[in-house]
Image 1 (cartoon, one colour):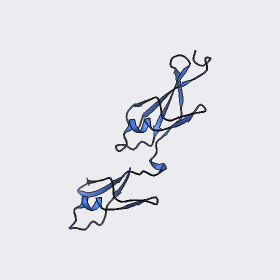
Image 2: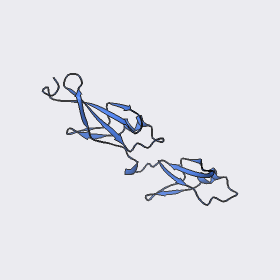
Image 3: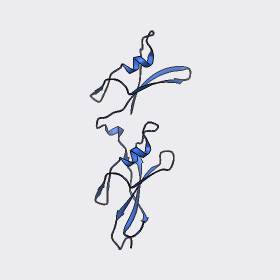
Image 4: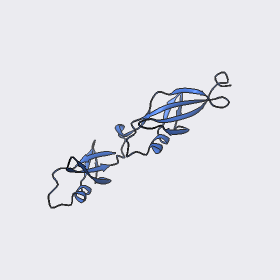
Length: 139
């Protein structure tokens, strides 16, 4: 989600309506108008902010996984592996949707998403995978 503060709004215009008419160019892709506009107040000053959902392949908007750590056996021949998710953009991103749609690669395998997701609080969203391992690792 990109945000842009509107400036130079004509005095006679409704600020939110003006905002919804504004096109924006984000890294060479033009969006006809923001998804929505908000009015924010900081120390007595009112600002109009346009919010745009970026649908292009924008790397700064993607979530990714940190280091994957083995957390022990989980049943027969299964290892639980955990990783922390990074670049979750609160409050705009739904943590569960982002977690369950973020792919990963580890243990010479690719995974479309974790098996489980947990929100452990401020900036701590954890994905868990239950991967098949050799009997010697998890009897």
